[in-house]
Image (cartoon, rainbow, N blue to C red; front, side, top):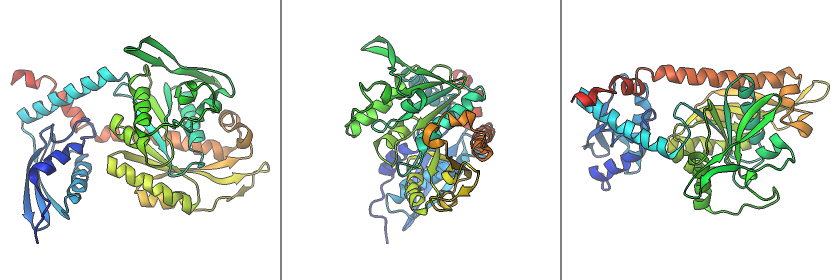
Length: 389
């Protein structure tokens, strides 16, 4: 038995799709792939050089390499992992900084911004409402928050935050050099920088009938051409499914962390597993799962499971992710789904939002700690090294 389709150079080129999560550059350009050879009939040996041998991102990089290898009919990958020498580290950091500088020139979104995309397999799970609610919860805690409505044809955040007020986005500059100014939406004493197609359309009744390339271009404008300012968090309300916008997000904002939203319905959760699979295939990291509309709380405080049970746990297990919270459906939600966030006295509802808020704070803190000794730290340690070589 032989690997008919295996070609080391072709595989090396495909490995350019594997991105170092911290440095934002592909592992081939960084010099991490130092050799590929056939080990047996259906396995290969990859010589992999990392900036530090104890890199906590090592498992993810190896997993992504294995995913590429399977596309060549390879069932097993053996890794020979070494640590880069000083010259190799310096070259890798220089390349990473050059790429980072190029990215910063094309986008005003600063690298320190924590990006959270809320995604779902199907529409109607309350993802947009939850996106607004979570963004508001962070804003109430004093964080500077941006909200990007990436659901180009199904936008709804404008009405949630502004009602029927007519507002439009402004831009500074000319047609060749301009920056879109986010709308400062103020509600309940908080302020959110909002960007949505709903702030560009002439009427909310107007259908947006765009094909894939235009959808991807719209997302790119919202990422690259918006003056987001000095925000701490950017929450992205994704359209349902696994289409062009999702693929565009993985390319434009590969540092995004994804919260997958489902309902208690096993059928809905099953569809959401495809979102989890999409994240794994595109390199987007899943931060957790939220089960929305877990149960209905009537005006007397009694809970009722209207949409089944177990969907959140089912999805979390399939996605190998943490079930962050179960958000109840309030009677007041039908009339004021957003304003009820700040005024509802339902403890279960408020606790669910607090759980999401506290979980994300802790999750990002742990991620920063994990990578403190990896590539991000090496980038600082070797900042001046290449000048001396």
